[in-house]
Image (cartoon, rainbow, N blue to C red; front, side, top):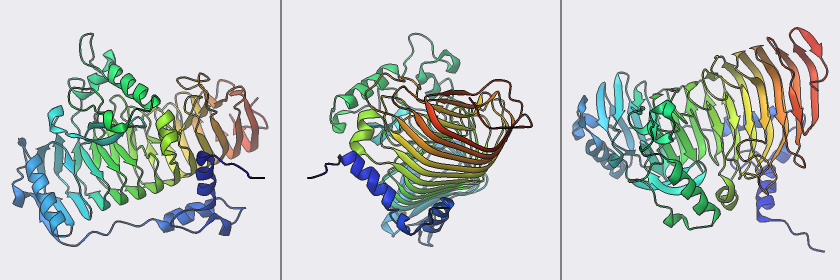
Length: 469
């Protein structure tokens, strides 16, 4: 008798029995899942960049805030690449520029006092291969973009300013809140068209948008890159998502400050990424602070590449729809995410931990571990697990969430502790809360289609409780 295993399940089983560049799971202690987090940290390493330095001023850059520097930056990058790589320094000043495309073995070092002012003219962003909300597409280049590169970095104490506002990129979202009015261009029709093309299996080469269309670009997007570092820089007012690594390996985002309250201004969106550290970062955003993804619907299932082995440590979350979020574009699965020593606090932070899925996505979320999280205020629940997101039960793919472990989560003010809503026939399974405390709770938790919910030393408003139902 031959056992048949689908390609999707074969990939899923393979990812659970190996950890690529670090020790196989068979050598790990089954009693301490955080041992895997230690392995992730030890497996990560900074990119190797040659020591030679190239100053953009020597290639025609002018930091007066008025001169367009796109060609000067490209000249410096091309010269650096031909020389085998190195550090490109941007000294203090204001540099107006269009898209910047990095190449292998190059570090873009934005010095303290240096500001990259990104043009708001769509013509300054050529069409490149990308993903838009989890769907492969040819679209506007990200403001800083790289594809198929190794050893790339963005560092320094400078500012990457997207200059997005209601008067330009943000109005494309189609919401009057961000300046859109009837008769103005918006993303709705292009977004629907792209999603329909993907569901119909239309070749990616025919999904060409960009100039003349209205799908906004990210600020930083690295596609299929290895050995990536983004360190110390500040990001402000991106047109869309801020930091978006796709199909990347060995990624470090460290000491980064992200600010922007525009539409879809997510702080960091790892998508189908393997082995990543997000550490000592601050997020104050108009959408999710950190949102882990792996592709949307048919495209996510076609590529079948999970996000996995991600460590989030000592980050601060202010405004946002969620502090650490998984979903909703997770059709390629997400597993082994570790969150520790984070602080979250804002009246405009909806949830601390948020999980989004539905029967159109059908992806698996598994083996998520959080500990030592301090939360001041959140608007709604401390934790939400939502299978009713967007299309909800209207789909034929089973969403899964199991083995969510939360230890020492302390919340000073939340309306409710947990909002966990699976679907009939697709229950959420295995939520474990240990040594947690919640204050300011005024509403009962919502627990539907959820099983194996366990509490160990959990307090609500100063009283130990044994059940949330």
